[in-house]
Image (cartoon, rainbow, N blue to C red):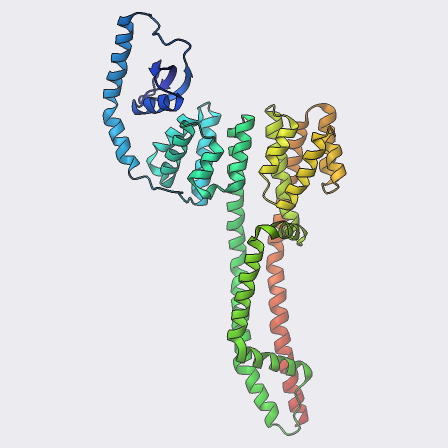
Length: 435
């Protein structure tokens, strides 16, 4: 039976080392876990015999192992009792929980702790709620040899494809703590943006509701009264604009249920078309061409792409492998197709900047900064500076959108209500003039 040499942390935080007999590495990790030890280093020993080489030493080692196992029996039974409470199947997490998990794990990894002891530490924290169960499941999979990114995907769908792809890139480059920290920053920025958007939409939402209420009053009360007034007046004639408004009012009053069903059906059809895998590239291209929304998506892609590339290349990964991992972390299929072309040309021996020029869809400023990095031999620093530049551009685009929401809603509502009021007042004045 193989012998594994280990260095581990005890429950009191003391460092202990020794050897343990196990059939394989996962079994050795499980045995250490049952003894209440958090492994820091575990490797298969070259020799089966104990260090002293005699039977007495072997018996002493076996007795020590059995004694430690007996001491940890109560701990293991408690662990089993807590394991019974762990829900089966995928566990859903809220965004604040994902942010907390990412920040805690990145801080512990940056402090020099290995992945499994870091997950064990998070598992022992009582205030983490669902994260306690998630940390336990991920640690069990990692202990059995499963990659961290695959364990994330198996344990909780809330992490998403982008998160798992970035975790895979961090594992491949050895910069998992850095990438997780940047991902936590991105998630917090996204949460702040949504909070700002909700706050900015409160007043426009009240305006829209007020406008809808006024429109309902016009359609159901004022326009029918105006129509009756004009028809009862000798020689009264309804103006063209008012006639169109009255016709629209009659149509909505008579067919409002059909209109609502048609709108709901159209929404369901659009969502089904958008979610179809065959239509995803088309929808992703449409999103990139939308006014206001397209530049935000592009800037977010450049920031994520450049930061991921800077981390991967800066940690010694080959450029081609870094491009492949960055492509896997890209969710927009249209942009992923462009990266496929870049990877193909770089694989054929073309320079990174030349490949971007040949594609023709990347900004000249980004290409120039990458070209400077290639010439100086510090492409990771050039990629990071470019990411910072596009991060500032992304913030400007978002502020521009937030600033345009309020005036746009005001203009639309003023035009709608003003048009209806103007047509009604015009019809009333013409009726009075006819008298």
